[in-house]
Amino acid sequence: MAGFFMLAALAPVALSPDAAVGRWRTETRNGIVQVERCGPSICGALVGSDGLKADPNLLDSKNKDAALRGRKLMGLMILRGFTRGDGEWTGGTIYNGEDGGTYKATVTPVDADRLKVRGCIMWPLCKTQTWTRIR
Image (tube, rainbow, N blue to C red):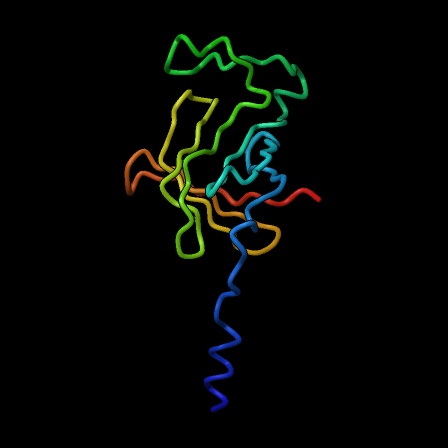
């Protein structure tokens, strides 16, 4: 019986679908992403970074679509199209303004203060970052 209680204590805590909602600092360039509910999904906008601090009018100059290169990075929706899965958000995309690419993504709340964000060109060519909540 004691073994059962030890296993129960090690089981992951079920997080609310809204655990991903909030302001998050990325691992690179002090990016700040505001994640919100978008209907049944989540979406996330870039609201700050080292580059945006230096120049809030930075443009999406590396976008693979030349017609979009004139849009501002500040406020740009970089996370979209997710479906709530078993403890994570799946089936969405993440846009990387540094290379102008959009990648398949998953967002997994680790706990109240950390998100695992994984972007993939195609599996297994993926990169995972841990984002930390800004309070």
